[in-house]
Amino acid sequence: INWEECSSNTSAISLLCDNVDKIDWRWLSENPAAMSLLLMNQDKINYGHLSRNPSAIKLIKQNLDKIHWPCLSKNPAAISILKKNLDKIH
Image (cartoon, rainbow, N blue to C red; front, side):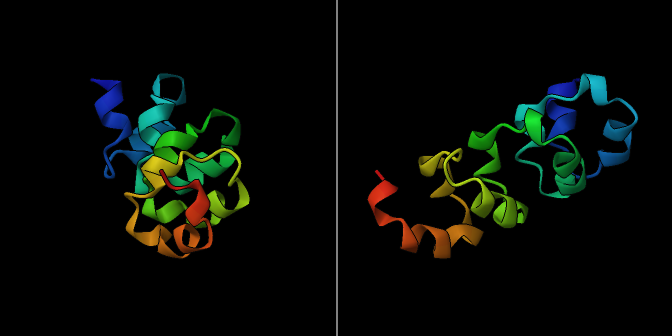
């Protein structure tokens, strides 16, 4: 198994839960199906990749100081955050 690719697979959450030690947290952070796993492991989140995750808006709002604004600009669910923080967008 290529764990980097598997970590971004929305259908692989149960496999990843059984193999937490093999997760690529960078790619899991971008996986919209992985929110429960991410919430249980917030210290491992890659906020650059989380910024692209449309399911992570609540977590993004709670961690605005950690997100990557250029990546957030690609997130269609983040328009309200972007409108309120125009000064942070390059």
